[in-house]
Image (tube, rainbow, N blue to C red; front, side):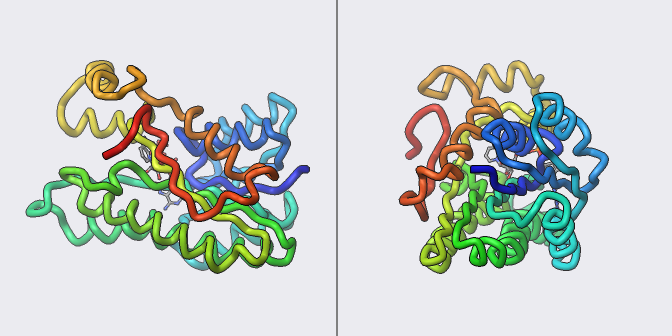
Amino acid sequence: MTRTAIVTGAARGIGAATAIRLAADGHAVAVLDLDASSCADTVATIEGAGGRAFAVGADVADAEGVQAAVDLVTARLGAPTILVNNAGIIRDNLLFKMTEDDWDSVLSVHLRGAFLMSRAVQKHQVEAGWGRIVNLSSTSALGNRGQANYSAAKAGMQGLTKTLAFELGRYGVTANAIAPGFIVTDMTRATAERIGVGFDDFVAHAAKEIPVGRAGEPTDIAAAASFFVSEEAGFVSGQVLYVAGGPTS
Ligand code: NAI
């Protein structure tokens, strides 16, 4: 069945791959990012493959912007019943160097963003008696040096996911989280730059530590999202799936 999906942070990386995958699965996809024009490549890829997509610009941490974006998507593609909360940023620093702005901005985009988007979309899901929410967590939820802000946000995404599962289950809405390990995107490229390592070396080093012997690709995460939003996954809710090429401790 064709549904309307919103994927946040879908201009590039994991969000773009997920938007492309959900469109290939037959859904109409709102490609949401800070700037609508940055979504052009993702939209073109979807439309080039015969899918339906619409670019929408919004800051997920801004309540008014989120509501306006969800209203616009509803008008253009139909009421959204699939939501992938993927938008994210990193502001890594050891605790003693971490600023309040580093803390607030990361918590704001990930957690406040997922809260605002979920609150705006749940209305349509409840009305439809069906819905799927997928939140992007991370292996960093288990703790990671230099990521006090990010690991707190990503652990928070897991708590949010479980509460959404409890509250919305009776309306046919599931909520699940995907916790990726190392995925090759601009985000991991920025980390390599920050620590002064070439990206190829950084990826090769990461791959050595990963049981399946390679780094993850955005399509690895898109495949997991595709499962969680499928019709047949309706009895899977409140779960956290680590997609990391091996077990996590
Ligand atoms: P990325 O940096 O390549 O893409 C993130 C996208 O989010 C960008 O297009 C950016 O413009 C958008 N964005 C940022 N702030 C926004 C806001 N306030 N409103 C709307 N859009 C906003 O990142 P990547 O690697 O694709 O990550 C996607 C998600 O997966 C993030 O939540 C990230 O934390 C998570 N993740 C990534 C991992 C990795 O290894 N790359 C590992 C674990 C989790």
